[in-house]
Length: 469
Image (cartoon, rainbow, N blue to C red):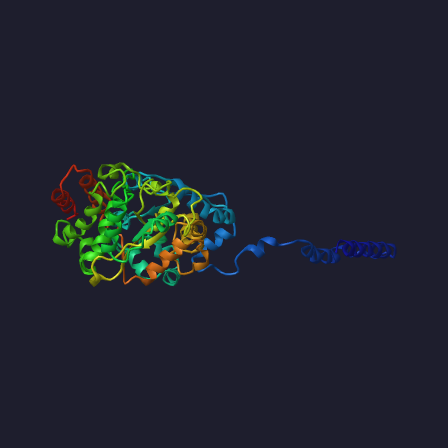
């Protein structure tokens, strides 16, 4: 190309000289466009090929972000992810940060539930907040603090990528009416019991099919001179949530879904026969020192993430651990699902209530409106945003555009199957209740009850008294 241009110029120069010699002015100006029309062909245009041809279905801002328009900007984020979970989250967003140049600065805290309300009320809101308790987000929504994501993310995309159940759980009542308060980024199933597979099989133990079978297994392990259960509920300011999960699972197995929903709504008191019946199944295990590693007294002071660790000692110091699928993030490094550990569905109690599944998830809400924040929340509405976490283990996607091929271990794939085959599914009750109850008195007084500092009736009465009027 360059050679051709120089040849053209040479011809023009020679022509000009000849014309000048003949007394005719050289028409240089009329020949300049010849050079100009050749110049663009010499220039590559890689930028244009990297810009999406059309606006992405999530929104214009995500399209612009991938075009590099927000490179160098920062999006702040706060949530409960710490330790292994924080690493998995940060790893899962690296591809987005690299592609867009947006820096997601995540701050995780074990005191998240206590600190986030203070920050929001004090005008120090992070751009995006991850709420593991929708009830806590609901409190912020009622104050008018959260931004309606229906105005940020294409509503058609939300309907396409989330089931109606997830959309309904993300819709909350603000001062001016219902809003899309958040989008679900990660889900988990909670009705699971983990055990050390090789040792379990070698001991000749069988996976229980009913609650009575599970109690018989508990008694058998104790009779063999071992401790059946690994239990711990310490979690900083969130201490007690692991206790409430047991109560919720028991509620789903001993009473109707209608009663469960009434309980969540504050229409069925804690100090009711239904709740007390559910509690009795939990305390039969928790309050028997022969059944719990370290005894009842150790439960409130044992960090929930450390609770299953003795299960992997040689020989196991405890054999059974009920928890959500995310707990695998806290298992000792190198442990392989299906080899070193396995799980079974927490068995039903009353056949009349089928095989219910308790679940939970992380809902992301937006509090500051800038283009890079819009782009990032739009990104979190895609399965791609949790793909890395799914592949690393410990997360399940609620997004319709995610793929089962991403699940690398039998545990998370099995949890997805359990949720699919569940006769009923309900969200974690304490996460749905108003923050003052679900993330407040329910956690506190269940912890106090376990520690023995308060009796059952007094604990339940205190929770009932705390319900917002």
